[in-house]
Amino acid sequence: MDFENLTVDATGPIARVAVDRPKRLNALNHATIAELDDAFRALAGDPAVRVVVLRGAGDKAFVAGADITEIRDQSPVEARGFSRAGQALMSRIADFEKPVIAAVNGYALGGGLELALACHLRLASDTAQLGLPEIKLGIMPGFGGSQRLARLVGPARALELMLTGEPVDAATALSLGIVNHVVSADQLDDRVEELAGGLAQAAPEAVRGILQAVRQGLD
Ligand code: COA
Image (tube, rainbow, N blue to C red; front, side, top):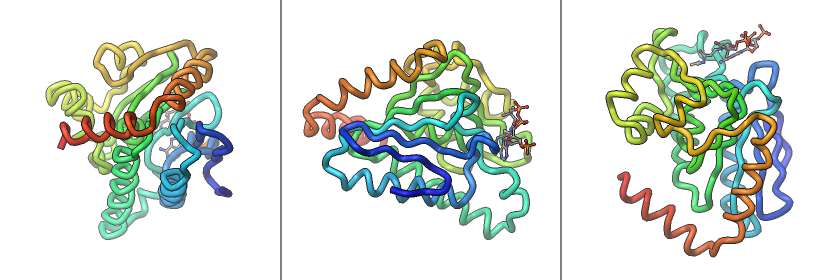
């Protein structure tokens, strides 16, 4: 699979997807959202793939949000279309029938945290910063992250993060239940591979059933 804004390695049971726009801290523009959607659609249909790992290229950011240089010039109609595309991508990932692990290797802000929240499991490096700063730009999280965060940590804590727009560090994210584990930055890839390797060996029917059962419980 060839993409402009992603790297995808799907040569074995563990597919590795990286958002690859390091000069923009891997921010999500329209093209990147479309490419992620295409990549996940292809990985869903590939029976050899049993688990997906999603990370940001480089060591500074997972994804630093929607691409501000793009959204600041959007008309209301364009903004609506952008939100819809983001929501569709997040739903595709949340509904994915194979586990998707977010390796949160740095900033996960705005649409970047929404992307991590759509994944099934989240491992963070101890350098990660997570938050929904949209309010500081006069907008709200538009990709479904407000609901996903509230389900995960409860409405009061979710509201505090969204209404202040202040990010939290990885340790706080762990204590809130936003991430499953925090590890040192140099250990993150190994821990994610270890987890992914175990999941890749689990019975696919059982994995699919568990993902489905939990999803139905959230509906
Ligand atoms: N969209 C577009 N470009 C972004 C971006 C985003 N969400 N986040 C970072 N970038 C770009 C910066 O503009 C900068 O580009 P430049 O080198 O051409 O000036 C580059 O990425 C590096 O970011 P920089 O701000 O210099 O890094 P930093 O370490 O000083 O700060 C952040 C890192 C994440 C704190 C800061 O970039 C930031 O606050 N980004 C916006 C986060 C945000 O509001 N996200 C939600 C959007 S809805």
